[in-house]
Amino acid sequence: MSIFLLKRFFTFIVTLLGASLLTFLSLEILPGDPARVILGIDAPQSAVDALRLQLGLDRPMVDRYFDWLAHLLTGRFGVSYTYNVPVMDLIKHRIGITFPLAILSMLLSVLVALILGIYAASRHNKIGDVSVMGLSQLGISIPNFWLALLLILFFAVNLGWFSSGGFVGWDKGFIKSIQSLILPAISLATVQGAILARFTRSAVLETMREDYVRTARAKGLTRRGTLWKHVLRNAMIPVITIMGLQFANLLAGTIIVEEVFAIPGLGRLILQAISNRDITVVRDVVILLAALVVFINFVVDVLYAVIDPRLKPQDV
Image (tube, rainbow, N blue to C red; front, side):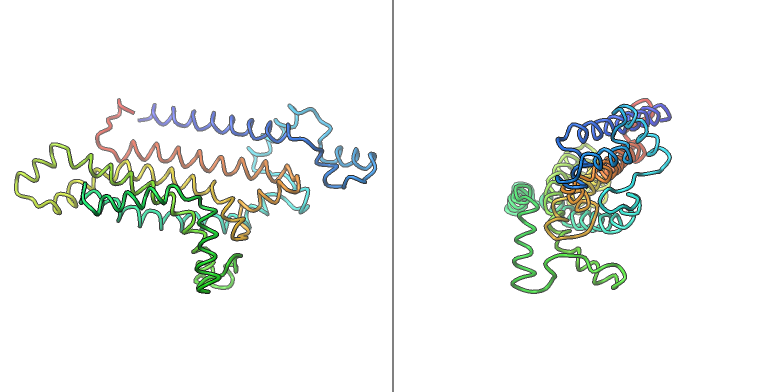
């Protein structure tokens, strides 16, 4: 197990380094000069040069990369060109919205997926199974930003049950804050829930074909009793792994939905920083999201090795 953990941790570090290098190079090759964007196209060249010197843009790219990497390792993020405040302050404010949105989306996704997936597996090749698979295929096919627009049109404009966008703030109360996140969470959870429902169905069906399940049925245990006592306990092991991976995807996938609903989270912060050519914000937030995704994947790998009794130490 210790060798397995060391291998996964090494992969975790290498992946983070690769993500940081890719992020840095991608922003470096973008056309345009951040100093010129900040000062405007009519600014004199002397002012642009002075700002480039102040921002460190005159230094070699390699030096700036390793300097940025050193700042990340010590927890010192940069300062936003646009807002003129530390990026960490922006992240602290925005992550308090994005993270609860991802959690709420994950809860909705898991709740619906487990119910539909188990229901479909228990009625294999029957009308219930076919209906759930059809709904899940529809859910996978619908883009979340298009579903977000439909939800706004129906529940906000026509029915008036929810606001069409924005976030009231946690200081206004927990209930009102969660209401602001309901529609965005549904639009995010639909695709993930559809995928998880199909995976749950497949895992349950595969487990139901195992020898110990047939033995339990031969001993007189009912189909429902076999399902709840023997099948789900083992079928949920790979499903839990997929849940962890999906939560990582939700954290990184809130960008478009937050923009549609005008939610001031990390995703919207990235889009605003891109439009303002605020490279410091884009670079720091992107690497933060990448680190969260890689870290969650690392934790999922470790949990899978811990909770799966079929894996022996030499297997992992």
